[in-house]
Each structure stands twice: as structure tokens, then as C-alpha cells.
Length: 427
Image: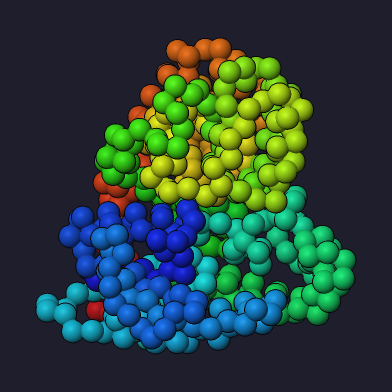
């Protein structure tokens, strides 16, 4: 098969969705498939062909003005026809012998263009959903970037925009509501037209149930490469003294990631942290509040801002506990997948798809409230044997469910079923 992976997020500079797309590409290449990532990059020049960390990449540039909503239109509707044309060109390039093509969209910005290209090529189209983009314009699933809510409507946007942007900018943005709702409708239309839709977790699949009929909806998790991670964590971290004991938080210091809850947890846990340092690998608007909470609780905290990804993995492998107090509907967190692969003991809140990764008492520990989280934190820091058992369980789960050969095999089976269906339909 010739597999085309359009994606608007891809290494080296991206978040978890981009790294998940990259991991899938590598796993498919390892299975002998021809894979090309097709990546629109804002501000880049002409079309370029190269390789990114072992994956062939065709990238091209586009421009988007720094004007709210106009910018989104430039990054999406105005871009889709050009992106579709490039996908078709790549899909029709000479190959000997000719191979069936699968187009697998990896993220929101490329999904409608992928549908357009699939129609022209007569190729099956797969779309992966890794966050809340089918029902939320901002893809967070949070009203005012604060409170989880089902989906956007005229009424919800009329209150969401002022809460998110502030009273005056939010009031001005109300004029954009018709465009926002049309844009969301286009996203959902792409999902309805795809030959298959992949949800990364049971939670996301449940959210998609009223948009995608069951026969086209498949739950396939993201990949974590245990062998690659083992090679990186063989070297100890250099940013933390070897004798320093610490608990770790990895992520943006924003409300959706539970940074405000982390401040409350630190206040309540207080003395239980004892001689442990709270190490924060991330930055964001709630840093000052966390600093204040740590001072009030007399907890030593070390902020690392944004550091090299390999160094984050090494910190995960050596921490006494990884804290994951996420407050939003987590699709399937890459932080948790990588922490499992590192064998880190994990304490998390059971939001969204997190229970697909953290089985309480087996591959980590779950606590649904701040007080419960703080209490469990204190217990685990006093029980090294239990932490070790949870870390070992997390590693076993990663090997059993999220390893490249496991997940890529599921994706390959889906691709083959779509190719066979397309061939039957053409006969």
C-alpha cells in the first residue's frame, strides 16, 4: 500500500498529536509500507521534500493573517483545495508496480481536504480524532476554556466567547458565530464522509457515536515506542541532581491540564511532600499561582519551562511519582503513554480517556477529587513498594496495548479491509 498521512501537526515542533502521527508513520514504515507525511506549514516557502526523524515528508507553506477568525479561514477553508491538489499529485506519482492508496488524515486542519482528495483519487479515506475538534471550534471541549461541556451552539458560543476572550473582544467576536458554526459543520461533514474514523479512546468514541455510524468507527490507541524510549532513558537526566527525590508534572500550566488543581493539591498535601521537590516540566499562565501555593505549603518547586523531549522522558523514568491532575476530557494523553513506557508510577484524575491507560491499582492510581488526590499522593510517597508495583504494571500495559507492533497491526488490518471493500465495489 501507498499510505499518505496529511497532518497539520508533525515533529520536530509539535504537541502530542504530532508525535503520535510520527509514531504511526514509523511503525508502518517498519512493516514495509511506503508512507509519506504531507504537512502544511505556516510561513514556509515552496513545496519541499525531505525526511523528518525517519519519515518521508512533503511540506509546503501558506500564509495566514494575524486576525482572529480570518486567520482560521486562511488556515482551513482557503487552504483545503490546495492541500487536496497536493495530496492527489503525490497519490498519482509514478510507482512500479502500482499500489493501492490509503489517505489517513491525522488532525483537524487536513480532514476536509483529505475527503476532497480521496474522491478524486478513488482512494479510501481514514480520519483520526485525537481531541475535541468535531464538536468544539477551539478543540478543547471547554466552555470559556474552563468548564467541560457537550458541544457548541449559538447560545453556548454567545457566552463562551466573552468568557474566553474578555468582555469587549468577546462581544466583537459574536459576529463570527455564523462562520464558526459553518466551520464546525464542515468538520463534521468530513467525518461523515470518511470510509473509517479512528477514535483514540473509548471516551472519544462515545463522543463520536452520534456523528459516525458504528461500522465506520474504530477504537485504536496511539502508539508509544518502548524500544526507542528505552534507548533514551538509558542515560540519566542531566537537569536534576542524581540524589534529588522528586515528583513530576509534565504539561502546560493551564486550567485544562489541571494546573489550578495542582495548586490546590500542593496546598493540601503540603508536608506530605517532605523532602521531595515538585518538578514542573512546562510553563503557562498559572505558574505564578502554583509558585504561591508551593511557598504557602513550604514545598520546594523547580520550574523547567520547556525542555528537550528526551530529557522529559528521563525525568519520567526517575521520578518517584508522576502527577496528572487533568481537568478536561483527555482524549488519550501522550504524557501518560510515555510515562507508562518509562515505568513511572502515575497518579491521575479519571478524566476522558485516562481510564483507558490508568487501571486503578494496576497501571497507576486514580483519584477523582482534589482532596482524594492529595491524600493518595501522601500515601504513595510513603509506600515505595506500591509505587514500584504500579510503575511495573504501567510498563506491562504499555507493552501489551500501545507498542508499535500491536497498534500498527490494528491499523494495517483496517487499511486492508478498506482496500478489499473498495476492490469489491469496483468489480
